[in-house]
Image (tube, rainbow, N blue to C red; front, side, top):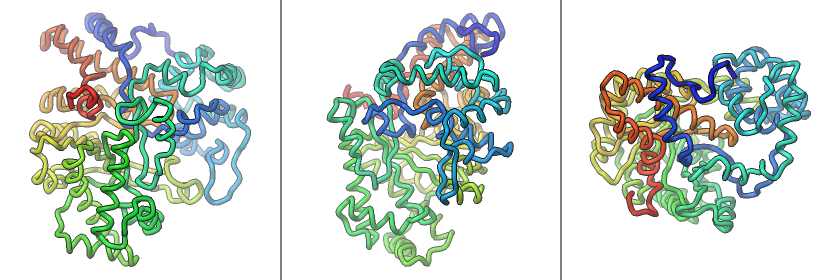
Length: 479
């Protein structure tokens, strides 16, 4: 880590603001973590098996890391990323780690380096600076920790002080891992590990294997998905199963934010073209847009918070996708329009207090122009934290500067780590809490906010808001 006091990491450099920020951060430093959206494999906690070697824990599954190295000519196969085309991949964890360490300089100034350095220090107690010369030493220190019972997944979960962790599953998932967690006292409604309903693979006609997925949905739900009404019934049945397993939200990763109100006949015609294999790209977009409206209606009925993550062009690097599949760093962001795209959904449900719509973006320029005014003008709309390409200290700070004057603090939904990297969860939340403390400290120093109000706000942003917005406080009757 840089030569800055650990206590002052990411806090303002100006002395007056820094002193206030220290005080504010101290109020949330030890608060339990609320993680209402993420992609940790629930099997990690259900099985509670020891983690694999350091490379397979920290490098191989992290597309933030493998993507950067790929941009500099290091093939993902040399970093152990599994192939889908049968090509060989590196199997030696130590060799993967050494190769990663040789390219550590590529991460200077990135949030990935910050997260990893904090993880090395705070999670594993490793203070040796990573470099090509120290690669083996750091590897061995982490490997030694992973062999200890205190570094098993459930033990770390307790140490991280995670109050709630939401994972993300498809409607095709039988939720058996969540059932095991519930049986062990870890899952179910009000549990520490809950699921999230993510139906993209049965809604998006352009998803690989969509028709096969729809057939599988029929088997899992016990409904006839050969018709559009049967398809809707199957989705409702699976949503009910997810709610019973503890879910409080759904998540939708569409290319755009478009919504569309079709008649039942129009929707059925689109669906039937999809099943016949004659739907084109315009049909697929129209069906996704229509289904977002249907999911909003379902959310009004069953209470699931609706999260929308639009703007990712999936598998843009086609060669990478062909060799290694999805979610390995081949996606890019695109400009996203919300005001007109969401109008049909907001006309129908935007003022209904039963709906909670949490909007995310990969297009930072929409913070001020579109998202903050929408959240400030509709009962149902909340702003999700910067995510993915925008999940950095700089953008977290700009987010507060961009949206607060129009949406305030209380039309935002709190921080989500949105990660598959279990060991990075506490450090990501720490970064967000420090940034918020610094922003509030500036308001106090400028005479724009009393210190007492800032103290209450920093706790709300870190803890109370995500619990309320994502209906994680249902057990307390306050949702």
